[in-house]
Length: 161
Length: 132
Image (tube, rainbow over all chains, first blue to last red; front, side, top):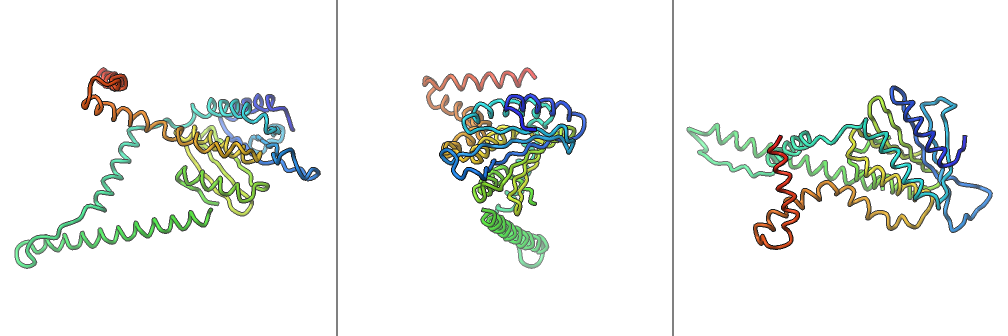
């Protein structure tokens, strides 16, 4: 069912209310490509926005937004989304963020801080030295792994683009 | 189908994917209120990338992405000017902190400069903390 922009927003608000307890909402945005007219006015296309409520047919609504109407529509649309999403999304948890960043810093420090191998090679304290040698090896391995991971990530990013 | 975990990565990938085949690509938003789960999906029928969040810290960025993708869908040229707005939105939270951190130092160097205004704000914040 294609409706006006304003009517669509009203219906969407109702949809949000209806799905508060269970179910979900899908919002699909896509370009409307008309086949009869090859060249639209200065190459711009209208936008189709469709909303539905988990498959229930009667609640499927859509609207077509012309390029000129987008700024006004987006302002309303964004405000509507915000009012409905904000109360149900998790709030920013600064405490948790702090703990996480501290842990990350600690891990990074452990990975990057150089380990000094010292102490006698034989006799008293040999064990201690051996442990340090082992720690250096472990650190090097973790650094190599991190570098490999970064490279992999970079590669994936390039493939996607 | 791939879930991306960093927002910046998702935004770049989504915009790149859209540019690749603007006539086929669709952008879907799924909202599940009972869990407070928001899933963004963009697909051109061959590749599909998704982003999932429960957190409200992405709301402003989400809004900016919505606008930028909608403009791309309409093939508007204004989108070229669009990229600047998102960074301020994303950097909105670190900015005040940086200001707060910078202002006491300025105060130390020269307490007579007009930087007294922001530093006063920092003092106010501290007082609030003490009350708690």
